[in-house]
Length: 106
Image 1 (spheres, rainbow, N blue to C red):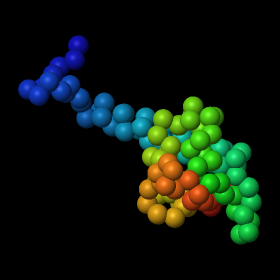
Image 2: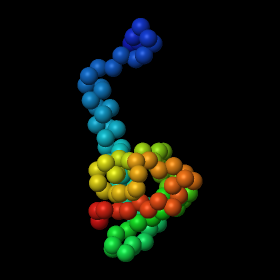
Image 3: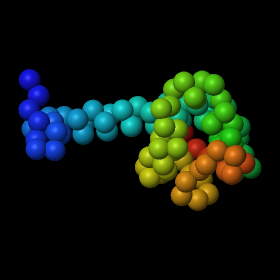
Image 4: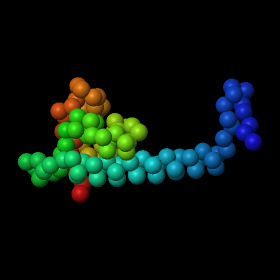
């Protein structure tokens, strides 16, 4: 049975909220791991010896499209964790297709 608040929103216990946070965190970590695999698959070694791939290549790849519900969000999470780097804060299809996404960790 779901109990609703005055605003028709489900009332969630603190324990349930903590569990949801853990599951979400595990999903993000899993997606970042998948992203690293895809960068390795699609990328090539650059002049610095690091693997890089153009954002447009990642975005337009059918396998990536099937794997990632929100590729841009996964890229931001990986950048925040210093696993990858790219120029700018946000990558948008078309505008940033030629931006390199560089794998920092092996």
